[in-house]
Length: 518
Image (cartoon, rainbow, N blue to C red; front, top):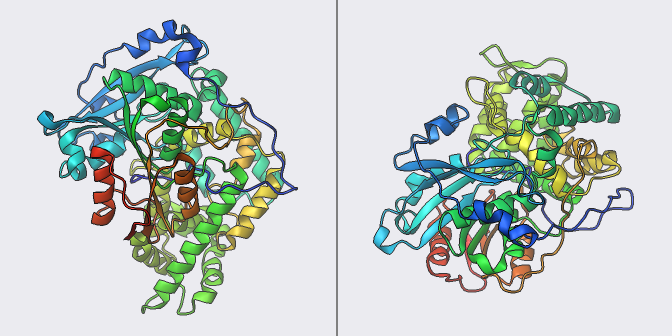
């Protein structure tokens, strides 16, 4: 995943807008009350628990996490939480937690908990990979740096399970076409497998949403010994952060939210806005590429989208070889390009991949797609994709007519055709076996500490205006980053990092109108 992810995709829902007349949604119940209000006495055993820290090796779920968990100085534990906060005396599940203790304990501020996005991203793995970076700044010196795998994700138990590794490979290799029946059939099968294969079945799926994750986060805050939460959230992680502030406003010390999701956004409109963001990023990629010799899409940016489809359309009937016995499908070619749109630093790699594809070699684009889906070299997938749907489908009211929204998505990003990886999301959620537990809404928060929101002008995943809207809702600070990338904090930009570190250490907000260049 690298870290901040996605989509949200990935999670994520973005700018607010009303649904079109052709796409209606069924109402969903408002977020449930905080767990403390539900049954405080029954929750005491969770809030009072002591975490048993130890070696992280046993928490690895694949080669990538195993490598990350070998980072010097990290330790892991399991946090016990209720499966269903409405029944805190019932079944329990566990949440995986990783920390790297403050290197300057004499000046320790507390714990800084982070989430990398998704939904479905591993906060444990992301935090471990960031340890070498934060060890050289105030985060590593003055905070215990903590990452957690939200319920159902990664090292948390049980994990949401929908497709086997072989089934995921087969799905990526398939070409369902653009027919509504094809999308609906695949989505219905996927949703049924999630319910059948996930431990606790419907009960687990019904309690996978952000509503429940923020309750787990408050239990984690208490188990870490913190009176108030200091939190760093990327992409979908911003939704966890502002939802926590709404549920527990008096328990917020600091919220740094990077790549913000607009809290009032609905699912179809967010996906359409995201498609438009990918289109803008692709146009910038094509323009930059055209300035150089060897551009795989030619020297005319206006023709780049057509050139791209001319290049990838033959894959529908004849997937490209990759040299390792696998093949590049049309779907995966599209996904590889989407992956490269997350950061302009990936554009040279993308151009190389497109150039190789002209010669029949799909290996580089397949590697990009593997990165998007978090498939390791041994063919194992993380829980990202399965958990993504499990959260999205209960966080949003379901669309009555997904086909209409699919067409809007295609119109917003025509260069992607019908192969974009989130194309079937609304169909999956329309078939989901449990009802939604939340809905997008403007939070009512009066007393939480003001957050610092970082928003990038050319972010293809979480549009800039979403960050502006979120900062306004919470009366927080806004740091604008001029560039084309998804999220910016701790990516090596000194202007961004200094502003973020000052905020996390002492609450200092950058002056209004502050901008950084990516």
